Amino acid sequence: MAPAVLLTHHHRQAMRHAAVRGFWMPLALEPAQLPQLHYLTALSPGQACISALLEITAFEPWRVPGIGELWLPFVGQRLCLPRPLPLGPQARLRGWLPKHRDDWAVVPWLALLAAQQLSDLAPQR
Image (cartoon, rainbow, N blue to C red; front, side):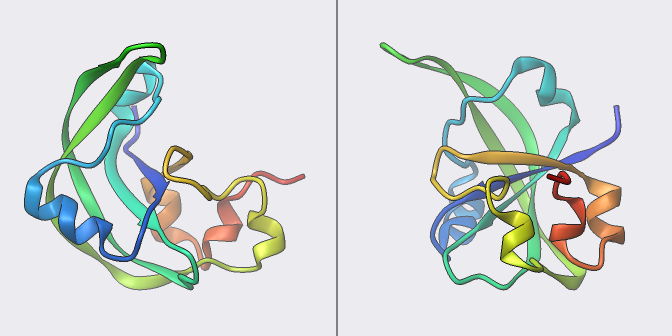
């Protein structure tokens, strides 16, 4: 399975905090997706580009009464992208880009590295 990037949404310092403590936050991911998720990045309000990823080292189940099983990503090193990736036109990202803490999207890692802007990877509507 080709490596993929988990796009999430959080505040500007969330990735730095996660790298220090070694884990992200529990997310409602599908178990079948876990093997392909190698990297994570968080988008925050007003952010114009993606410049870094966190390496995902493992997942642990996180049970929440009344909700079910979530998955807690453990993270390793912070990796800077070779060049910042602009998000692109907001109109193309609307409805796909994560907007809340529990939202997420998955993009192929190689496609992310090759894209001129993140909106190039958004599903066509």
